[in-house]
Image 1: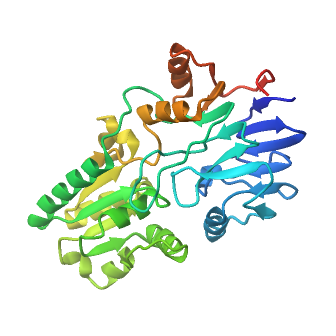
Image 2: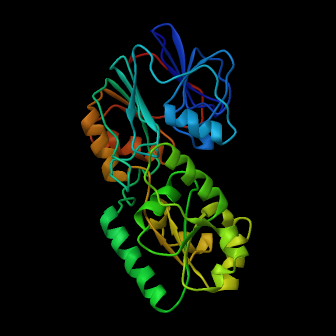
Image 3: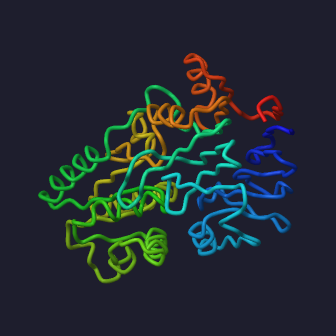
Length: 329
């Protein structure tokens, strides 16, 4: 059989059983089947002549983000979509029970999200974003407790709080986890994503938008919580809000384990609430899948492959160069 190849920064190309399958390509790979694991922009691609295999939720979210996918299916013989636990609608892919591609994966329950499901395979293609030993996250319960204590302290002093995460996925989890506080306002891009989630059956509370609160002069009645995207940092919006309302910013990402992260991002606090597996969970994923061959991709792929080899696994990192493997198919 033909094997596995990666190149050109265009995802992973799998040639198997006479089909060319593209896994999360960035542009049209001219494949028979394109698998899109979830609706983050860096995983979406278009193709006019390919079958696009993805979840119904991903199709809906992609459309609402002005990314129209054609010829989509959420079922295909021999191709099994499995919950990956990353964001709403995110899926891993198992091909003929032999090859498992994790996509972005999380093995922790968070808010309304259930942890990813791992199934046995012969070949595992695993995302390794946090594939170094220093990336071990505290429990979600501890993070929530620590953040609630911090908010309570700030509110007691009349200080408003800005909770920050990616507008699709993390921001909806924050909206759910800290909904007991009030008032809460949503940055416009976050509110749009929250409404998508509500339309897809997720029970999130309706909150006023930041612009509406600003227009009605509600932001001068402190304290309050604003849930905003991390990308607003780049536009200087966060600095303006912090200066005007004396607000305190809190960011949420696995990279917060790096003590310099909050300073690099201009945050007052940062907590390692992640939508990915940490190092220990990546190892658990490997044990559960019990593969004969492992390919690591993304993040610390080389480090994690080296670690797996030290444990006796046949592991190889797919990093940056054109590679073709034929021995394991």
